[in-house]
Image (tube, rainbow, N blue to C red; front, side):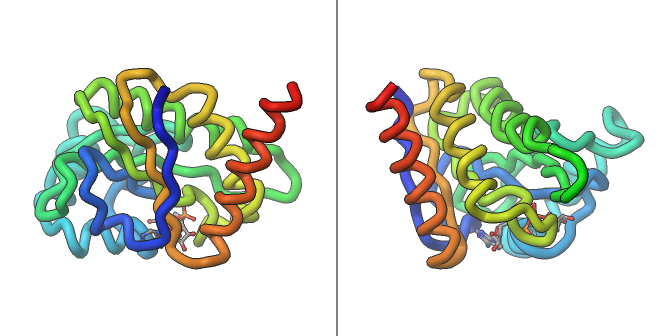
Length: 179
Ligand code: APR
């Protein structure tokens, strides 16, 4: 069974096979995780993203989809770019957020990664409430991580996010225990 670990830190420093980027559909960079990955990973990543836009995603990477590129100068070998849904009070987009994790896991197996690091997708600029983002992330990874993956690591940037994922993991395990 895939090990799930929690780390408080910077996703760009993770020594894993693939790090997941909380991108936007343009794949041309941004702030937060996206900014950090491009800044630390260097121009090769953006060049690869531009090629993807030209060859496969003329209209941009759809929300909930995932695609891999080089990781440039990052310790990781690959970056898996995924586009989270923007939180909406009027529309339940939980399935799209779950799809970010599901598709990133699928791409990870496709590229032969065995260890993958995720940020809290959509829980920053895209405004998703952290507790709910953590619940969806933990449930999707716990239920759908392919056995080829040795480790899925959630890398949380601050204490609040770390505590939210810790609680989500405990709640999920308790739920299973009582099921
Ligand atoms: N390492 C780990 N986590 C980080 C890092 C980092 N270096 N930087 C930010 N975070 C955390 C944020 O604190 C938040 O909890 O990652 C989570 C996701 O935040 P964002 O990066 O803002 O991603 P998201 O909410 O999905 O918004 C995506 O923001 O940066 C732009 O181009 C990006 O348009 C896209 C949007």
